[in-house]
Image (tube, rainbow, N blue to C red):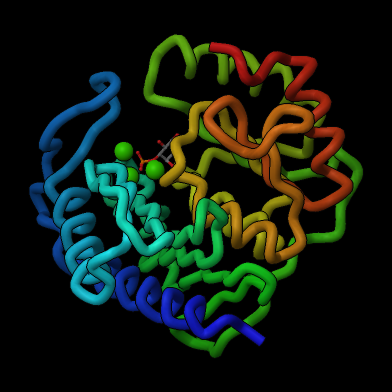
Length: 271
Ligand code: IPD
Ligand code: CA
Ligand code: CA
Ligand code: CA
């Protein structure tokens, strides 16, 4: 049976993701501009990233004032309850800026450092994904009820469809392009969707065989990692490590190890 605290956290995360997704979908200004840049001139933030994070943190803190936060756009507080929310208010800002549909709102709750609840809303797909630790991963769509997510049966690596992403820092993305160049002949194909959280949910939903990326931050992967694992995917980093900034890999079991071995041999975690 699901822990009643986790059920409450899930309901709150779903409500926050629904409201932020609606704000982002319906409130996108036609003349949306870059408000500021971060790690490099292509690492952009819009007023909508900031507004969505404020909506999410105000809503959650209003209900649970003792929880901590880690948000991409600056939310950061310790909290005293043992619960911390890890929030990417708009994952896929560059797609959003251009009007491309692949972007998401990603919200995870950690209890004493362990991820227990995850919600990723992808409003332009009309789909929201969620997971509670130990209770599976699920999708809800505009046209259908809840369906349980399960990753695909593993194909041989040379028939695997794998997604990746590129960091905003020039030296990192240049090396990532070299790794992708070496990897692509070993796979069916490579995709670059533009939202790490959606990539991880696509592994969970059996729409991708695998995903990897170097340079992710906790808010990019916290929710998607739990959703992928609860759908039966394996997730990790370099051999023996958890998914994180050096390397994040999520794949259907059977694709995970060969993919991890090739990424290790190609030095995918280097700058
Ligand atoms: C980015 C997206 C992208 C990934 C980048 C992330 P943001 O997040 O997830 O797919 O390749 O590494 O930084 O900045 O759009 O929230
Ligand atoms: Ca960003
Ligand atoms: Ca992100
Ligand atoms: Ca973001």
